[in-house]
Image (cartoon, rainbow, N blue to C red):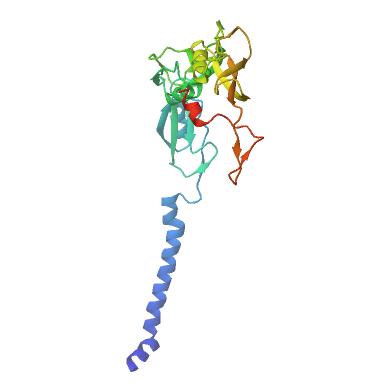
Length: 275
């Protein structure tokens, strides 16, 4: 206890403590105002110049005058700029950075990248567009011509398999679903539905809506009539069919009774006989 009391009452002890505190304050001042600014360029800044749309050599010289460094980060093809011109920079122009900061450059390449043109003939329009974009090309105009299969590619402006500049435009000629020739409408009245459908397709026409009408005298699933009722139509046009069904078909109520006023479509067994 006496030893501790002597230490705290000794003037030398307080002199040492005071000296350490003073030294710490002095060291902090030296670090703050003399040493650290040399490492961090404290209170100094450089405004980044705009070096886009000039050549790489000019950009390099300009950055050096501003006390900045540079690095070519990427090379891209852009027809708007000459070869070796700056397309983009980071940091952007007018930003304030520390001296000796590195500016990253995107430079226009002299040789444009190429790609092989895909074959999209006979594909649907949607699939063709996806293929063209996946190969790095641009979908151009879409013109339509008469042909049987709607929205199918008939021709493309760039030949499949050719190697051309990536980003080139491919124009498409698309089928409108209508042929350019006149076809004879087959005689389908009195035919079973499945047989009539086959005749219609073989003639280059389409089967559209099928409407059922009750008939006492005609076998179910027999074609009664069709519209448009013409002898000749343009290839690809659609026919609406009127087909017979059982006249005495009844719809069962929830309690199991049959509603005598309700006519049902043909049974599944009747339809299966057509197939």
